Image (cartoon, rainbow, N blue to C red; front, side):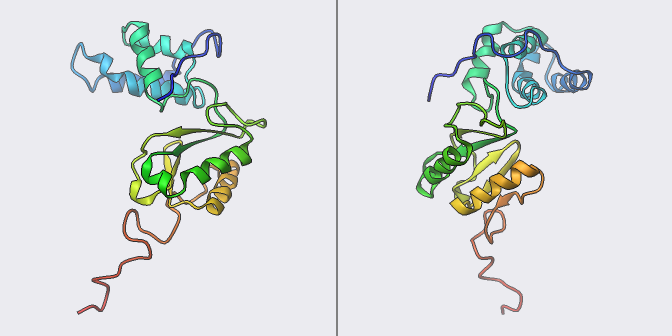
Length: 204
């Protein structure tokens, strides 16, 4: 696992939740017993990242620490440990490529090469020149049977080939809500590829 650090001086000097996000944060904190508000640190950091269009500046980390009455270092530890938190600006389409063994065996290295070639940047280097793309490598994203796969925002795209991945990147750049999510082949979720083979209609 690589060392992850906040970039000094990168981002705004201050940060605060919008009124809507403050209301949302209070609802998250209310889920925990009195005195345990620090348990909400991950969802609040995630919401701060969403408000910042996909990344966490130091000002947002400090704001969440103050919001939850936590030492800065404790929140810094969380933000730098979990790779779901991006510590520098990302592109409009930020691609998380799973590189764990099942995806690696099924072609994840080829997907990484597509990222380098199509985006013009290596992992964790920040947005492409036009600001459209960025990418990073993740540990298991939880769809091993449908390897190789990627995640963009909250959606996963599975059973990828090089050709399908290249087309998918174009589709995402035009409209992130347009592409079909989940398996990109003839498969229902994690069922066998090609559809059912037993207990089909008409089987005795």
